[in-house]
Image (cartoon, rainbow over all chains, first blue to last red; front, side, top):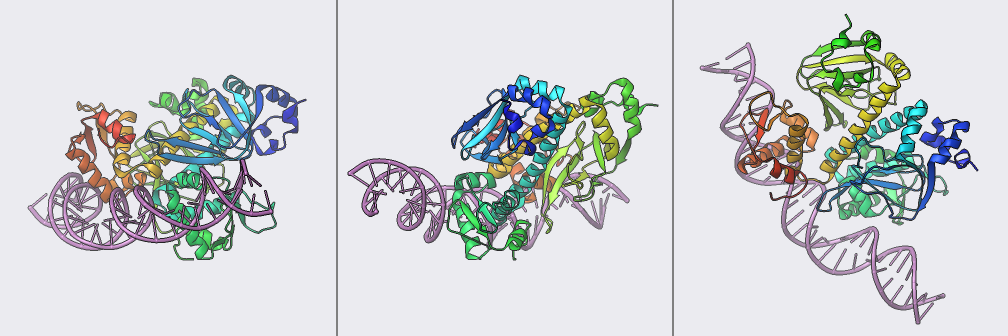
Length: 232
Length: 232
DNA sequence: CGGTGAATTGATAGTTATCAAGTCCGGTGG
DNA sequence: CCACCGGACTTGATAACTATCAATTCACCG
């Protein structure tokens, strides 16, 4: 059957630009993959042959230096696409954080889609524009915020962006990634991330001992911290 | 007459997506402006009413924190556009660095252009994709590079991107922006930028005493530094 | 030629990295 | 079911890099 027609997250992704009839074509030009944690989706510098749409889980995007230093440039979760590039090679790498499902489009087929469905291209432009705005926000964080402000910004962004209301707990934030990933995202070391989270706990701004999930006690104080009011 | 037809940088900008006949329409929907140094083009957070195409000079884009800390997210020079956003307000500010000329499109007219010229949208998508790749490179710089590596990366990028061959000097790099701007772009202080440039001079990697232009003596050592080889 | 803002240089302080133990937690096997 | 194992995380002590504060020096422009 036509897989894309019954896609649960269709309205959250770029695919919403395509109507029911044409989704048949889309289903043929894409393939769904299920990937275990820490799988390489895109190797940095490899030739750009595919394009992915995340339908479940979280993917990390990153760039590295020859000596191994790494900067995670973003986490892509449900509904996000990745793999666009003008050059022939990917300028970044991508790995799964947890178990991930993606739809993969091969490049020639993507080109066809872009040519045939202006709406699809329109959606893509909007998505990339959003990503650029996020990247600018992250540059502000990396260039000008303190460790405490960075961690607060990160937790706040995850609280707002992924309202984890599956559990009964209020303001719960899930952290599927490791401390290494958080550190590489915030431009810090794992020790500084750990110490800073502990400090926020001591200050009763957050709570919870689980390493992969915390609860925000005072969203307003967190918001204050994230925007540079070092008190609150 | 039809200004856009004789535009000297047309083939360097998004306007190259539009053919001669239709440029007449473009000329009507845009307006050319000449602006002195340090003019605000876009106020951070103001409502997004216009879109600009730089035809001469350099514009700085930035984001700020309430207490005044600022991060310059990029410099836009000849051929670059700026002002795209999905939200109703700009998430960033923009100011001229030197004397700048821009073509201004008002938002409704831009929407029309996008709808009528798929090629224009295509070009825009490519441009934004490039900017995103640059932003990711800058995140690597801000999150993981040392001061010396940051300055080396900056000088190298300007050498490669703006081959300043107007003067006879080889490998000349022009720095129209102030030390404050460079510092805010690299996530450093002006003192650290100044000290680092002096150190590169001492190490005979660059030369020149002019504050707004230097000459690279050893591009290869600069390249090594920029990618993390702390020797070279 | 003097004035003024920009840039450089110096001394010191602070934030975060590095190095080094521990502790916690999830998974595995007895 | 419980003990053990190993990786992830936390905590502590110290070091290093860059920021801050302060004083010149430089260069541009009237």
